[in-house]
Amino acid sequence: MANAPPWGGHYHSDFREAVGISLNVRQVFLLVTQPHPSFPFAVQERVRWSDCDPLGIIYYGTYIRFFESAEHELFRQAGLPYEFMRVQRQVQLPRKAFAVEFHSPAQMDELMEIRVGVSRLGTSSITMRFEVYRAVDLVHRASATLTVVCVEKESITKRVLPDFVKDALSPYLIPAA
Image: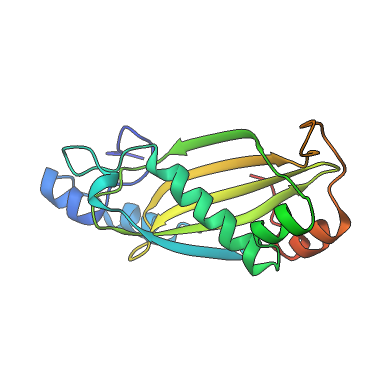
């Protein structure tokens, strides 16, 4: 698309006006009607002063907190709060793989919507997919995947993911990206 930002996403309309980018009617229609994936769960987080660099742009590491918050609340919504899983059911889920793609920079004080779904329930692992949008107008900020693996606490060796976990998370399954 002409005049696309270097990060591959879309410029917000205020930013387009500020830097003098003009779009024709067809381009504006495509920006407004671009479908966003449907996710079964979302949380909202605000970009704080401490989350930003001196220019007021979000520091990339802040997204880890956003993803973790969405993950924890998804598990809580599914009836699997981590304290219950860790302490009462001995289900340990350390991180195995994490990948993020940044689409556009968030600014200080933006309210972000972090959508999350389970893209894979494996024999011993869970892969979650995240999409982050500015809440007010759904400008796409970032995408990520996170894989956690069920392990034995003492040896940190893989173990089978319990059926109660798979059953609780199956309503949150989404297509893989």
